[in-house]
Length: 290
Length: 279
Ligand SMILES: Nc1ncnc2c1ncn2[C@@H]1O[C@H](COP(=O)(O)OP(=O)(O)OP(=O)(O)O)[C@@H](O)[C@H]1O
Ligand SMILES: Nc1ncnc2c1ncn2[C@@H]1O[C@H](COP(=O)(O)OP(=O)(O)OP(=O)(O)O)[C@@H](O)[C@H]1O
Ligand SMILES: [Mg+2]
Ligand SMILES: [Mg+2]
Image 1 (cartoon, each protein chain N blue to C red):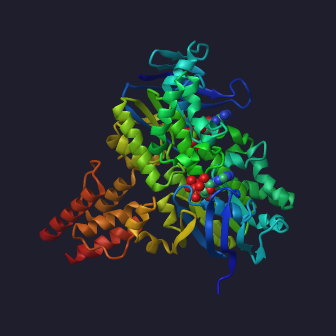
Image 2: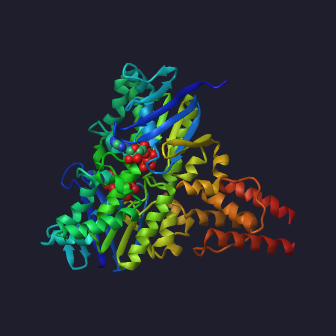
Image 3: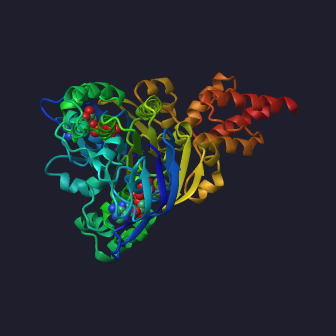
């Protein structure tokens, strides 16, 4: 399913003295099958944006289209439940989506609600548990008696269990240990490709954006600040610095290296090993010319 | 001699009699005016350690001393005055109806005079960049704004021990750096002990000492540079080393001899410069 925002405003507590415009005149189009990263500093409107994607909130002005579903201020789709069964959202804080007595019930809640057979749900859980790095021993535990990273994994499992077509991830790796961060992102990426999903990733990790996304949208104070291919947008240090952001660490290093040695090495999503070879090569070359 | 502020003596803990032990014979000391980072895989026991430090939990075996006083039911009220903690999820600690009430709350409990309170609310909210939100309800903040306010609340009480449990996980990298430099300035000025629990490797590098947890036991305890020299073994227990350490490793393999285990950009560039001038 594709996603379109047309001149969307979102105002919290509209018509009250506390009215706060969190999104302003935002337009973009995400074709079906893309992997989009949404980036922006604290409070720039990322979580507000993604809550539109499953109809949790509707635009104050403008229109949002998710496939054939249309959301406006005075019109919501009649089949909201279907929208929610096709768009899975992993929220920023996992506690916000955990509520059942046990981990197993929590993961089963979504698919049960959407009428998936018990047998199939059990099968899904069996597959998902190892994929998110949980051990089966935790299935009968209360989701609130877990460590932060374990809760995060349960919340992710619950969303994967509904097998959504659009996967929306709001900082899904926050709280995961380094191996978990890598494995979970790889798992999302595999799933994205295998199941031909549309994926929207809110992240503070420029590294993940550059590695997995084919398109990035940068927000600043609720408006679109930049948009394009990650290797084009996320290399613009000056423009990013202006809105409190920075380039990925590898690019930061390459720029500092060039400044120090006068040797430009272009960024092309190379591996660290490849980068090391390029540095070695560039320095040798330069040495032999002196 | 440095002054010991926290002492864990052979501490073991489990969440119930039928439950497995989550901390097993854990002993360590933390000194005054020291920054210690605690790292470890998910579920390795980090948050449990934090909760034991301010008496939210009590160990079944071993003792914990804060400032020479053993932590138990009778001492927790005194101890909590000296131990400020930011939880992994800030929603679990908001008590005020507005941001400024929330920052005031901890100070009221400690009997800080009104004028001083107003000054500190202003100072700590400004330090985390949230001065424009003093009348906002905490639950109406964005994820990162909540973390900033939670940090302001604990800075305002100016405790002797400051525990940050993944308190900057929702901040952008720049915001994270800014907040951590604010916190480390306060640490220096007030000579407090700072304990940061984090998965952010660039933050770990800034600490003086690192405690590495693995499956409920202390796996290692050393300076960041010594810890991050154990690259492959760290990866085996679910952790990793900073980008610069990985790059230095690969440079070594490619034939450039980087000798000093660099941990940040400047250090690596400096090493490369030394090599360059000899080429
Ligand atoms: N429930 C709410 N009521 C009123 N204002 C809100 C509410 N939730 C968020 N806001 C405000 O809207 C703006 C955008 O918030 P949003 O949560 O979308 O930011 P974000 O980009 O996700 O930030 P972060 O990276 O910190 O999570 C912020 O200024 C925030 O204070
Ligand atoms: N309230 C609880 N009841 C029972 N077991 C718990 C409870 N809280 C945590 N545990 C278990 O104790 C172990 C240690 O949890 P802890 O929260 O200390 O881990 P952590 O190192 O902070 O992990 P993370 O990086 O995921 O936050 C985990 O196996 C967890 O499942
Ligand atoms: Mg957010
Ligand atoms: Mg924890």
